[in-house]
Length: 96
Image (tube, rainbow, N blue to C red; front, side, top):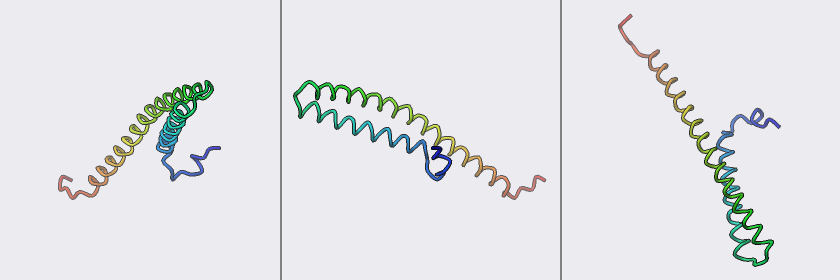
């Protein structure tokens, strides 16, 4: 759908990070409920698969967090470089 081209005001790496965290929390809560509240075999299996999904989302959470951290560091270094260039251009030096 190329939503990243249509809505450029959103920080897409951060949106992916929030999606992953939300999914991990929801799967974890539902898995605990399935295991604790119901005693039949299907509920236990659903709880185990839910915990497995939680682990997968947690791994994805970790990987996305590293990508978001790199993305934010690139933004900070770009702002610093721009600020340094602007400061050098605006300085009144008599070295000319």
